[in-house]
Image (cartoon, rainbow, N blue to C red; front, side, top):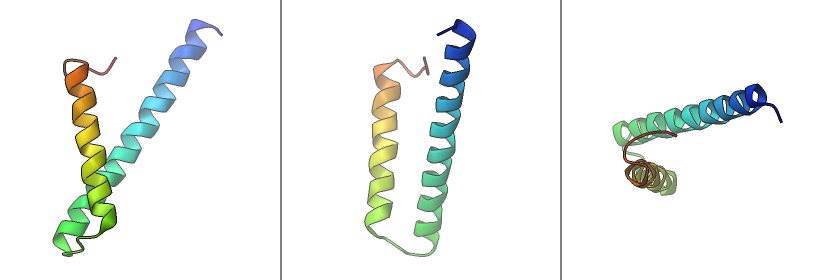
Length: 63
C-alpha cells in the first residue's frame, strides 16, 4: 500500500471516529436536557471516558 493511500485511509477513519463522537456528545446533551437518563447516556459517558484515557495515554495528541 502506498503512503498516500495509507494517509487517506487514516484520515477517513479519523473523520468517521470524529463524526461518531459528535453524535455521542450531542446525544448526551439531548438526554440531559430531555431528562432522558437511560442506558445509552451511560454508554456515551463510557465512550467519552475511554476517549479521555486514550488521549492521556498519548499525552493529549492524536497520532
